[in-house]
Length: 77
Figure (cartoon, rainbow, N blue to C red):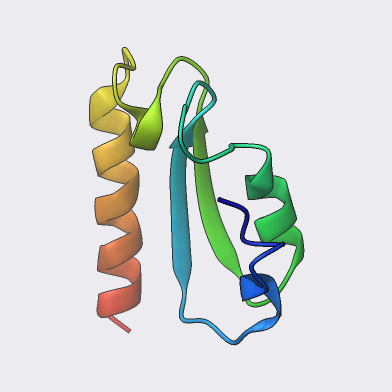
């Protein structure tokens, strides 16, 4: 599933947070730098020892904390 080949990177978007593990078997973590370089500002968290959405990481709570911090910042505005 490539956001680049599907044409999504050139479209307008709302604020976005990307949370992924480097061992994700479904969505390539190599696309995160590409997402950060294109379009509107984005926030990313890449978990070295995690799978999809950082699952299985020793810092599993850190993934959830990153999402909550992002939501608090964007919903408070």
